[in-house]
Length: 254
Image 1 (cartoon, rainbow, N blue to C red):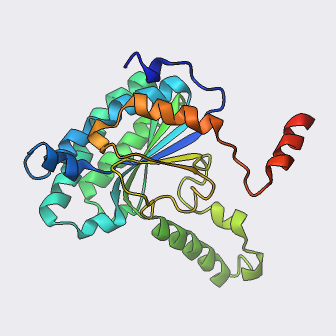
Image 2 (tube, one colour):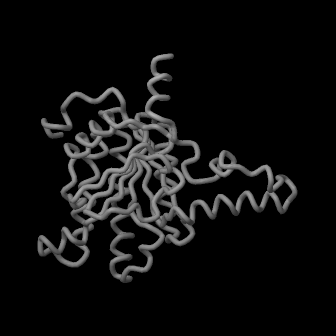
């Protein structure tokens, strides 16, 4: 790990859950005259130092957006390459998960994935289920709108069966059925690549996330830059709908 920002003192107020939209791989490939799809290959290696920093810093959950539900619309050759990279990433990550005692999880609509990839994901989850240093979540074939609709569908099925009354449904109940319901809400959402949108990623879970955008393309994104963002996160005031004065009163009362 670098000896600069990533090795600087870790702030006392840490995000429990960081989510990252890993954007800019294709632009990186074009800028470096790499072959078609090779920007994604370069981006694959950028994840390891980010994971190591998060473990060292004490982050509980890191969720990364590897392949969205909308990415299925990309050229078939690019989709095939991305699926191959996902499979190789999982193979490579399993020994790293054991080394750092990281739990590996996946979210998204698995029904669209190949049987081999689904089996590989399930095997990786089973092999790392007992680890508790951190949880690394990889979102594959995931979309925030799909996630919320899927949760609503499960509640609707209970209403149909007479197990639940529609008027009893509230946000707390729906929250139990979205992906990562058993993990902390996203505190900090980072997007690389210079775009200023969250692209249907963890819409429900990021309701009060602090947003960070950087021009840095994902293959160039470093643990140092993430550490700088975490330091800024610690300096932001998170009000959750309250006023600054209310927060001061609450802090004084503790």
